[in-house]
Length: 263
Image (cartoon, rainbow, N blue to C red):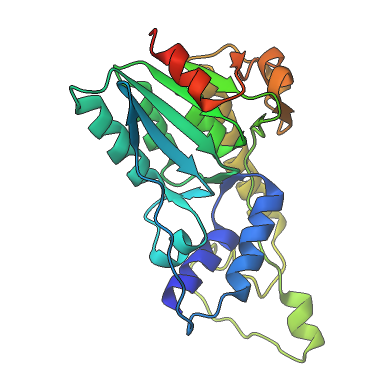
């Protein structure tokens, strides 16, 4: 119950950089899992090494300090990504590193810290998606020296949001009234049993705007993407390249590895 509650809290209260449809899917999936049943937790794909290229798999929604419950839903931990990249950076057998990404994004928590470390990797770092590198996953990809996409893969969704649950009408319709006694004028700003105040909404808007601006600025530490490509839209293949979010279209992993062999 505690593990499920933690994910529910993240989904309802934290700032996310994820495609909203996947956020909704995560919320729905977490609601339907029965914590009393036993589930098989599929381990994340371990890193591979091919001809001196370390392949780091970054799949599923992303987050920080994930528990078994979240991993069961296919999420990848930012800390695991960095551990694998740092081991590849230290390995004398590795000449370059490939971030193989298929992810709709994840939480802001833990993301800028990971990005700062990825940008300081000294070995050639390439990001490749043949599925999706959206939102937080694109923030990760943008830390690489180049971003490669397949023709039908999607990149972008550069945006940030928070989806707060307001249960006040539902509670009232079911005959419930919450008597909240609190101290601290902002203590109950995010309480789901009452509507959000205008002041609290303005503070939250300022916060997500701050993170969106940081997101865009971080992307352009290594790129020159125009503002018009960072409004939350997602781009496929060649459009991803022409939008400034990608560098080349390559349609399979083996071809990317062959290119990286020449780095």
